[in-house]
Image (cartoon, rainbow, N blue to C red):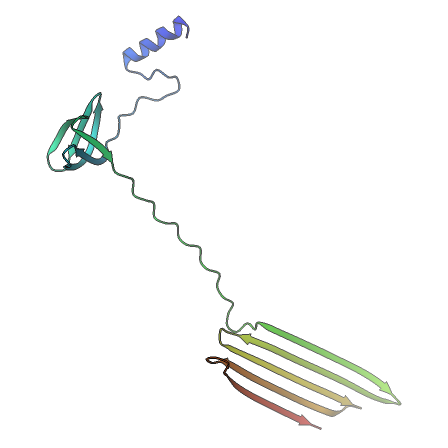
Length: 184
């Protein structure tokens, strides 16, 4: 360090200003909360106001200011309270019950002209399966509509509903419903 920088540092220290450039005014030490534990096992709580070369001063909660030496007692700062745990990520919501686990849709149609006759056919099939921990529901719907020379030749609808519930052991409960309708 040059003699000029040394003179400036001594002057700043003499005036009570911080010696390092770019620092603000020296902040007053903040009191630390904790426990003053004596060599005989007794302890008092309070704020550590200042440390000295061989001890310090504590503002106790019950007895006012209390000076101590390192030979007679030690100051243990309290651990800062743990930050509250971060909120847990919300669990991925299960899909709504009405959404099927599997489904399929088939649509078919054709139109033909043969020997002066016109025929049209339209077919629609829908199958869906819902699954739960112990249940399975399967729905099947089918319709077939046929027109020949502007007259309805075939109009059929069918549906099936099957419910299976797992019971204890190898046992299951089964329910089935079938409906059919036909207009020829």
